[in-house]
Length: 123
Length: 123
DNA sequence: ATCTCTGTACTAGTAAGGTAGTACACTTAT
DNA sequence: ATAAGTGTACTACCTTACTAGTACAGAGAT
Image 1 (cartoon, each protein chain N blue to C red):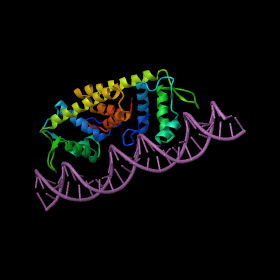
Image 2: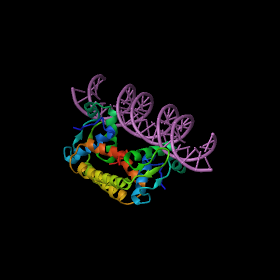
Image 3: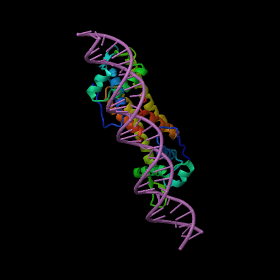
Image 4: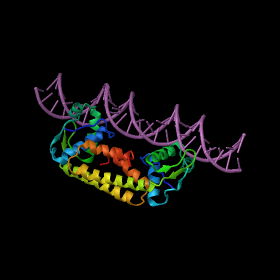
């Protein structure tokens, strides 16, 4: 399943999001599959359901899940594409930020802004 | 001088650090030059001296400044090399993080950890 | 129908981090 | 010697954000 690093500076719900996306990207979780329920994952990772719920809510808003209330979290058909797109987008912004930001004189604030958003997990 | 974006999520002292490094990288500030005093910069940017002091303290710890107590902040001979090295290092970590981290299945926690540190301004 | 599962809303506590206020010690120049 | 500059230490406020506690509403199965 997913590994949580409680020592990390990254918030747990972000680790969950990244973890699930990673599972999809690796093919261990495919569109149509059912992700573990909020409570199940919370119990296993010894977290509060709300922490897991936040991750699921944001993933759902991004279109990873399709499923009705009270039932389940089924990975949408777009899930795989989304996970890959997110990874590509992040990678693009990383390399772009590295080259364009530092190669020549770009506004310092812009660089910092990029880094700030990155930490927040703007994948 | 330096531009501060108060709307940014990046802390002010980090913006100051990045800004000064940028000035050095662009050659507008050279080794041997004297950086503005803490109070002068604080007054100009309408900040508390402590905020600027924190930036200067960290820069000093990184070896950008050489100067004795009570006098000034003179850019060390290494300043230019350090600024360039920092930029290169960041760029390397960014591209590395983008490719290695997301290309195939790396531990999610590691990715998050990298992002977290990046936002903290680990240049 | 009741029990158990699901997700969720609201609240609150808590920890971390950044910034400002204030005061002190020292150096230099007038 | 005095005044004005320097950097710094200590404190405290404040904001932000993450996480947990608790309780509620709906769905499905026995």
